[in-house]
Image (cartoon, rainbow, N blue to C red; front, side, top):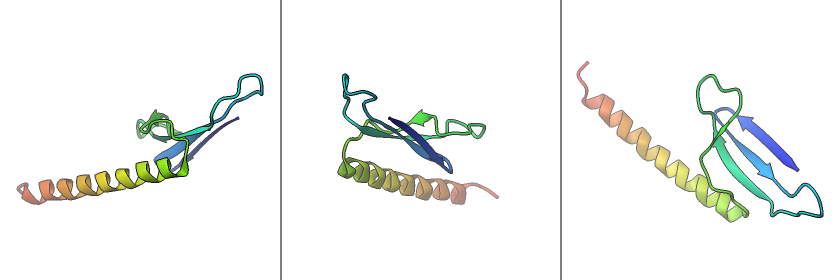
Length: 82
């Protein structure tokens, strides 16, 4: 089974074994749109994650990193001449 969902600039791909003869562990991978022209999230930004805790940890870390980037970007703009 394969599922791909995009919401805004982000999305996820879910994959699980397609047949009983070759079962594969289910996993989720987080994606982002690679450009403004992309219709779907197509650039992977996470490892394969197999548990809810792994997903929570990845998203929490990403939020913290984006907050730091936001603050640094605002500071850079504030120090530039008008």
